Image (cartoon, rainbow, N blue to C red; front, side, top):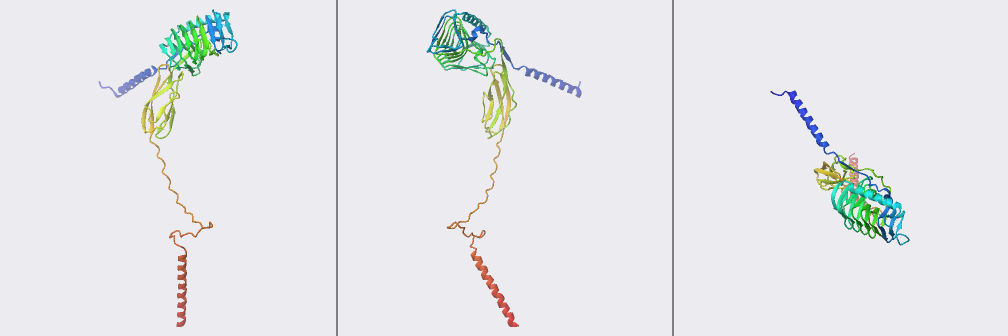
Length: 404
């Protein structure tokens, strides 16, 4: 039986509603993911220590410890006292109740850090990495000589590194923390011993099952805590992290979402700038493909800039990423208009000739504007003609008188 016009209209509308519902499901399936880990590892009374050894603390050279220094259950602390020995800008706890309690709290913190579920496993070489907040585990962790590790987060971001065996920071290596995060919330749980190389710039709290060695000139913003072995120092500066958030403060990372609208149009041959923005914690970085010739993207600031060279439309894919999935992507169009025609040059004004000057600076007689002839010649001719006319008139009068 043939379907009536009203029935067909109803079916079309129903189909449209169904497609809209499907699209809504697809749109919501890529919602931003968020990862929340426990806040800072609770160090208890060990939080005030820059250096805490178990068997001994040994120093060579003018080391500076900004924080407490202690040893327990061992009794040996050497290399601190009068110049040129090391200096402790805090309290020294040599086998006292304070050091004993700090060791118990160090063990508790070590066990908590070791028990966390990793967000990434199999880590080994850290050089060149930029890591968002999370728990990272591996066997022997290392940062190569002159290598760089970046930790990008926000004020409450937390990083926990789990090294099943050793931690080795190479000479001249550096750890950089960005986005308002701090060494307060960086923890290195080490299954055996940790070594920080010559002139390295290290950040975070080392919780070593055995010993910790900081070689010549290394600097530490954080803490060196050894559970069973010694801490060995050599001309170092160690500053215990301060102003740290309390234990349990959550650290949250959120996937990026692009928040900027469609890029504005451009004109060939004219400088162009448009900023791509995105939300997310930590702050995302940007990549782009398909940009018009002459334009480029700053991956950190999100600014598209340059001078486009060719008119036309380009389909551009922008991606924002911060280590938390999913990455944000947007497909946009940048239209480049033809160059603006240059204005035609205006007619040149007529040239003006200045009359020549005489020897004393006076102006010489000007030539006639039209003919350029000397003005005295026409004057003579006019005089001659005038005299002839007068003569003819007088002759004519005399003839009339004679006839009378």
